Image (cartoon, rainbow, N blue to C red; front, side, top):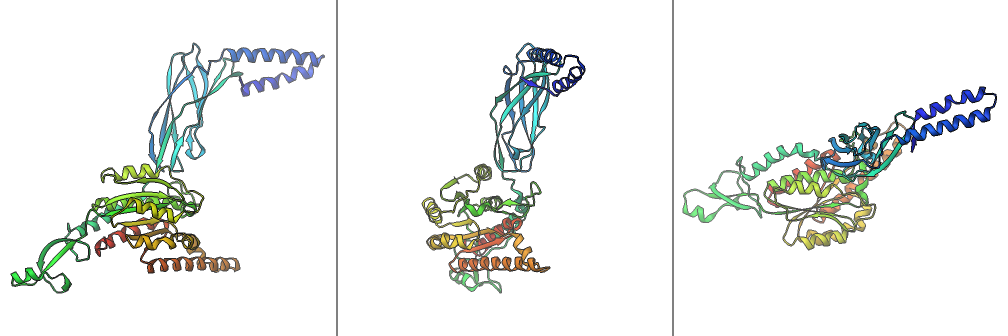
Length: 440
């Protein structure tokens, strides 16, 4: 049984007769007894909330930043009209509106209640309890019960970098020869023969074809297709740091590095699949958290966002040796391995730097990292003593980052280090550059 504000108001009004009665104790006992009886009777005549039936429908997936409706069907099989409220509770990060629905459900009637979610976090949003409150005809008291009506909505990565895809696909078509720009490069596929023009690489001359013709003939090449690209997402502690601004909620604390890395991975996967390459995916810290291998090109993006959606940063140090071993077990042929991690000197020195040589000896390795734009802003401060100290610390952090990037490049690993909003297009451009120079 629950009491309403009206019951409290009536109790407050009853104080006046008690205050002016010649026998206050007797007046108090009589009025309290009457009020209790009225409240009990009112609650008795309220509709039974235990007998309500609930079913759910609606969407089971949505992209982060998009509203999604959770539909709750409430049926009143009892013999009394239910007047009150129904609350469909969700986690705070779901930003559910409205918090409760007014209910006026006749006996035997079914109503449809819609709760709109505006999630601020990626992942699985699980419904909490559905609480129904029925108020008696006098509005003093009622009945209340909670019901577990499970429902799950998976909030997918928003793929904000999709806007960069058309321009990168145009560059890809150039490389493939739709806009005829054919190249010569080691490891690329032979395309055709044509006459030599000034500026062509003399190494591309086909001497046998030249001997059969009066003109010098060169071979033209195109980027190879059907290569393998392995995207490895580091979900360790460094991926939890928030950088930039959260573009889906305008939150100045920023998105986690993990989400920015996911966005870059989606753009690269979309581009590589259009280029005819096979794309595999692995998320790893100490253990493999998720994987997607041998997916068809038509279903790749849909499966990739589904696999990425529930991933969360693990507040542990990543095991680089286990990560590399997982890649080597899965990938036998030479491939492009893209590591999405952070250029954190202490973490790399104790982890990846010791095992990267065995990976780069067999595969092309590209490390992509999200740079914190706040470091750049701090490095420019000179207004007072505090800002000077901040600038010195920021400059040291930048130097450490440049140093570790130089060491990686000397060991044969390509590095893409860019601010959050620029990482995805920078990674896509580097992939296209590798295609253009015949490294893929």
